[in-house]
Length: 512
Image 1: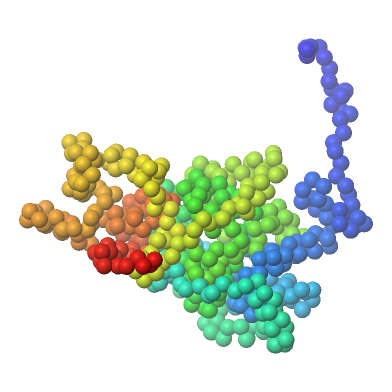
Image 2: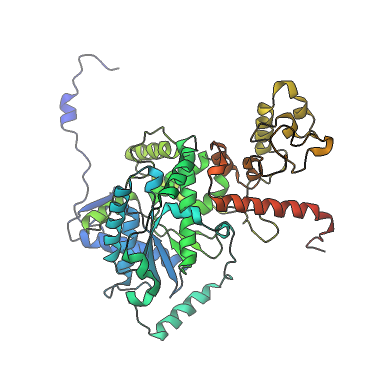
């Protein structure tokens, strides 16, 4: 038993700290300059070779990017995306041992309007990004986030994807590409002749569009919903840019640490069914544009070490979540939790990341001309088409009962009674789309016909959203601030659904 007068000072002074080998674990000759994990010490040359090999091994193992394809690199200016850009430059250089064979392009989305930054600060940041991109020699596009307000509803429709090719097709494409012996790497003037206008000057920022975008962000009640909405709008704009500029692949710079945070926060936000697409190496939810994440094997520590040792430039640009409190949003709280846990338990991020590798999508959604079972915002397969005896349906019933006014609770008991009649002011009430003029009362209260566009759009939109996106829209004060292309696509899908329901008796089953 411990005694008060016991002295442990002498033992504590002589305790030896476990030493780390000062030699590189790979070449066993040079002095180690970086420690990635306990026991993984590398010299400068071996660390560079290790870093480059991991990037090319990730691309070579998956064999998604074929030779000669145009790949759009989404660069935000952060360490991870700038490191990805550096790896592509290295792979296309003349001194590369195994050259990359795709044609790169760069896109930068300016999110200053959503973060509340001034026009001068935004122009300064875009000028810095332009200088960084010009040094690469790749074609680039500087796109303000305000351009998302001018998108077409077609961006929310899954485009026809090219037919899946067998594994032998990749090797045949490589052999054919080598035999062609064209100019490689491609000269900048041969990649995109129509990029001169994009690169000549900074894009104009319309004040009216900036105000509309800020109204959209301010209409969301929580920081969690704002970050989710911003992520979806950014993704829509990236896909639109890739399609209009002729790119077939979109390359993101999400690293292992970022994906570990995203996995846990997505589960908390109810996106468990979409984890495989949100965190996997490839994401084909858009059909013709495939998203890839070649940096997903790198930890943030490895990226920072590499950028510091080999002078990879990066630009810090404040975002929507910059300098926010840990409890300001679910995403920020999850990031703080994982970061602090990683400091005490170094295998935290890798354990979460390895779990994400085992996830697979059970089934894929489709969006045909007459029926669409993908989410309106994130374009993932809807996870709301479940049986009645489920937790999701129980949540909906509980929500409906809690929103019913006490004097008119009979509508909650009688399922045949329209909830709109019991609570006409509720934005979350479900509408059947039928006119209430059966007794001649329609329009007498000054609200217009109940089936007219004056009815809040949230009701019609909720059936088109997955569970997580429903929560995001629920946190908005009004969906009228959403971009026009989202509202137009929602109306189109609703009309298609109503038309299909009307002619359902005359449609033959596919098996017949």
